[in-house]
Length: 337
Ligand code: SF4
Image 1: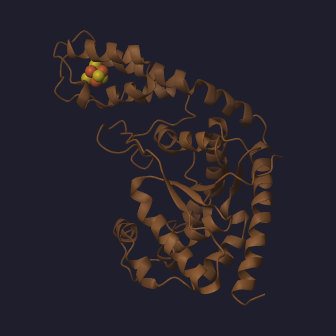
Image 2: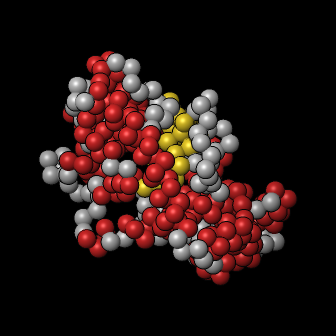
Image 3: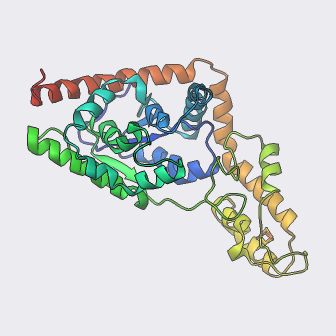
């Protein structure tokens, strides 16, 4: 197993286990994770404890394990290399909960209540700040613990998550001021988060909105879903020239079809030489080509029933070795040793 190299930055990033990933997850985050392995030691985590902050029934928690399996299978199929990167499940390293509790001693409540996504989440859950679970308030503290437990110095974030990381940096500064230099202040690595609009043509691709295209779907399922995509609403008959710039089928062509085909789509659409049904068939074929290798690898890994379990067990061992050292150091600094 490759050991982490001293002189490379350490990346930490996590994803909630929501089950099989979709094209939006791939283009927005996973593809970037794969590329980061070239230049960083990467630690990729299925954040199952975070998932519990919004889980309300035992039926939902029964989905956690199958969701982790499916998601990690997608990671590996996309090119996350468990020899190079540490791939593990958050709860398999219980030291993160210890660090969460200890960091909560240096984190003022006001910082947490001011986080814009906290207020947003409370609204979405139809709760109040008083009724919402304590785990949701402390979410950014657990997130900070996730990162610094492994002394990660770099976190890939989209622009919207920059305030979260700034909070993590403030918690680190406070801890270091009080107890001495212990943790690196994690730096944001701003990543492009392309807006991948779903099949409804209106909102970000998302499983909960059912406007998504699953990575692991069969080519037939993909084609069937693509045929439901919303196109230029003014193009009610084929002889009306289309407006690719307002059509999400075209925006997906731009990402997934070869450049020469994209310009042909544009020309043929704007001159009414191409119908939307053919255009969608074309897009489905581009998506299926684009994902062919990933799907092939996924099938291979799926045929090895213990593969994901072994990867996660190895990842947890490697993560825990780092975590134990950190907790020992923190105990000493905080006077608990
Ligand atoms: S032809 Fe293609 S790009 Fe033009 S409106 Fe129809 S689906 Fe969209």
